[in-house]
Length: 278
Image (cartoon, rainbow, N blue to C red):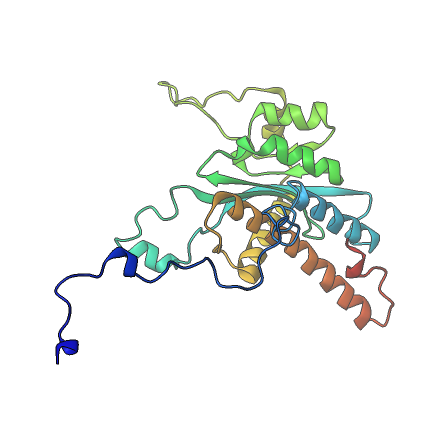
């Protein structure tokens, strides 16, 4: 049975099977198809000022519904930190695996709100810890562009003569910020003098009753963290900023929605509708 014995060597090249003639027959892609085809491209990216436009739309809707008028009496400014990861405060304090969780590069939200309605007039997202003065100019300019107010309340983080001059002399806004004594104490034990025209004026007669409304901005931050969460889901810096601004816009929409429900419950027809936002 010689046929059952395998050959001692490989067959010659001329006895090999013929090479394949190409790909299997079937539908082929169109010659004009490319990465620039409309079906293959992703959708257009969102505009950079999209968040600002949405915030403008919420304030316009609130103004249409009577939540705010053309101008308000008081507004409050402050900043707060948000969590960039889903880690509980207790675990971050007790675990050695989370050193400095709240200290390095946490998302920082600075905002100005209308004290009567709790609507946010402007917001700036930054990284903390940083002084509050860094975001103040942009924050105040965007707030006054959207809505006028006569008095601005802030904590000691915004206390400076430059802030008072900017508000009172350039923008016509009455700034109320508690005055702090700066510098090292004198050897004689006497207190350091308070410099600046507006700082001295506030130190002599500070309107404590009006300043008590500054806590409304703390209420706004508390509502955002309780209702929408204090931890962010995004990871990249741009996505973090976008998520914070979306929560600010959602906060304003929740207030508008609440006011609409109160209108319906009182048997009155609502003046506005959420569908008016475009």
